[in-house]
Image 1: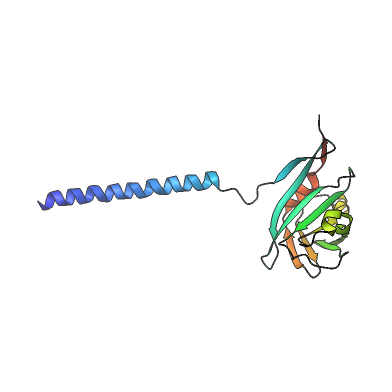
Image 2 (image 1 turned 120 degrees about the vertical axis):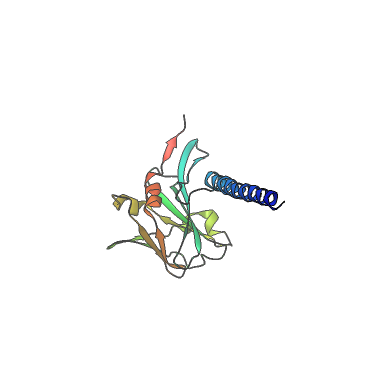
Amino acid sequence: MSCKHKAVSSFWNEFLCFYRIFITLISASILLLFLPLSANAQLQNIQERSGQTVVRSVESLRDLEYQTWQMVAYPQEDSDDNKVLRIVGYPGTLRFDHPNNLQVKAGLRTWNLKDITLDNEKLSKDPREAAAEFDLTPLLNDLSNNRPLRLLLKDVFTELPVPPFVVQEWRTIEKIQAP
């Protein structure tokens, strides 16, 4: 009788081992298929009133204090060449006196991007104070490669690292004439 008991016990041990391996493989497959990669590009096409399609970059980045900021780079509506960088935080996180230039550093180079928040009527009247805009054009005109950047905004954040793939997105945004 003890022989039968050992055979049944061995069968269940093997079954449980197979079951655990099967569940692990299924779980890993589901995670790989449905979880997005953190470095995925988030270029978006948006239709403007004028009939043009605008390609914009939308990324969420963390500063060194682990606070999350959304970075939206897009072509300025009334210009073909000028680009805008909008920084969005939680409501109330971008309370500062305008204008306040955004300092950008890359190695030994430094740029001061002009604060154009007050030029945007919607942002200048928004009581939440959750977004600020800067003229990104001088930076993009000077960059010859996709290098990491560090953003500094006085009284808001001391350093916000920008990885090269985000810089690449910023350099590729443009307006496309719809057919």
